[in-house]
Length: 322
Image 1 (cartoon, rainbow, N blue to C red):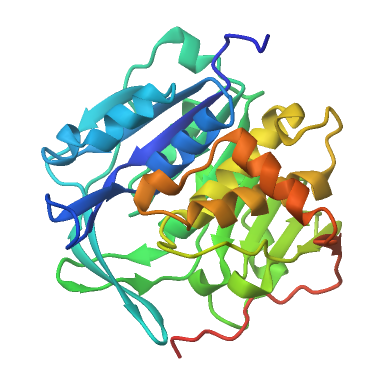
Image 2 (cartoon, rainbow, N blue to C red):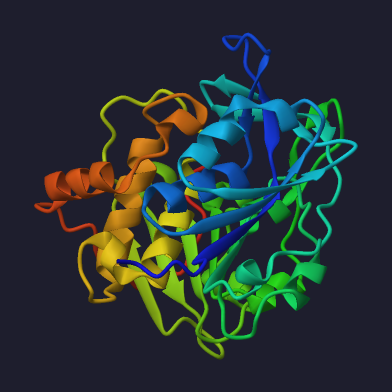
């Protein structure tokens, strides 16, 4: 039996994504919802601090998360982030309908404060550096960097901003972002200077797979390249990156989640890639897979070698939007 100790606490705002096919006119999203549902469905005892505006606080998706085992503490916000995601032949165009406000640290149950890992999952740069002081020194910390690399102005397209030094980045042991979140000529060294030695940086590169690099003092000490896991039928790409990162963190916290007690980075990557591939096969949070589904897809993919050492240090690949 797994320990009943809280294994991961996620922090971030629930976003509302405009959806014409939903009777509400929107669908609940945001990195914190995808990440928390992922770790819960993979079997980890999961808690989440979720910022919500008035409409989001009534979302049936929150109940689905609770049903999956997520212990949720909602933080009421005067405004939450709202996005209109528009798919075009050149890729996704994202419009900010509301920027939201910060989710400040709040009093937490003592069981949460002793969690083995923490996952800071901003979608609109709403997780301030104050959270770094809340996290125990021995906890594993994951950060979804992409949510800190956006400038949101209501009514305007979301703009990319350059990475900057942040306390929660310095505290992070696992950091994830997409190659589309940074300039094309960005190198691993450009990004690793914001992280502590030994931290792992995940860079997803869409159909090219991606990289997992371990930070050294001046350069990466190890870089693994993985190939993408094919999907059956892509329905909605929203949340795939957050699902991937959360699955990778889950294996770091409890290696047996991936089907083995051995903590192999290659195995962890293959497992996380399978989780990310499943996440796009249904609408919104309905696509987040459980552990049997991920292990099943892993079995299908075992004939493919999808994690190997790489000398590549260039982050950017061709951006279809340019």
